Image (cartoon, rainbow, N blue to C red):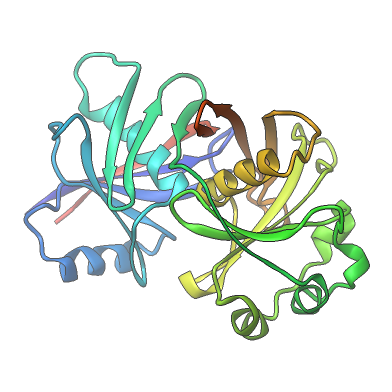
Length: 286
């Protein structure tokens, strides 16, 4: 069996920035072990499989694998996979598609910037700042005590940690063993209200996920969605809506830009994460 695959850069203003992943067309007839083996051999943080090239119940069935296992949702794989469907599979132009993921249905709207609407946010427990600061090799005073340290999920949970400055953000060093004992090892997303030098963002962020085999991620759509929900919930900017750009990946030489929007929509909250996508390569798995 031959399967076409694509390598794309997501949240990349230009090629070879952002966060890369592999997108594979096909795989519906393969057992889970074979899909997992392909993901392991591709050796990207995530590999997605477009199981069929026709819609089912208004969406495209997609599965997402890390080298270590399947995940129900991830942000940059959702945008990257939708981009491949838009550019490589659909014969006629469309404005949006929906992905059927394990976590739920994720609509993606096309344009120069691709936007995905994430699932409704849920808010988990808060953590005491002092022990969390120690796992980051920081002092408690480095954390922004005006806002809580809180678990948030829009499909994949992340612990959101507000910091005071870009210098503090850069100094973070995660004691993962201590962090797992303290917070269970969920994705760790730290941010501060400063852009990088010559950057174009409003906030800067870093994401750590050692339990997924990602010591530091250059760009994280799922965690960024959690951040958007957090900023809105706690009125971080003192407003009832969020419209910001987040810089991530600078510390590891993969400068990425993520666009966030969050608004109250009646009884629901609209969480949107956007970014540009660049095609890097095409190939065949045989």
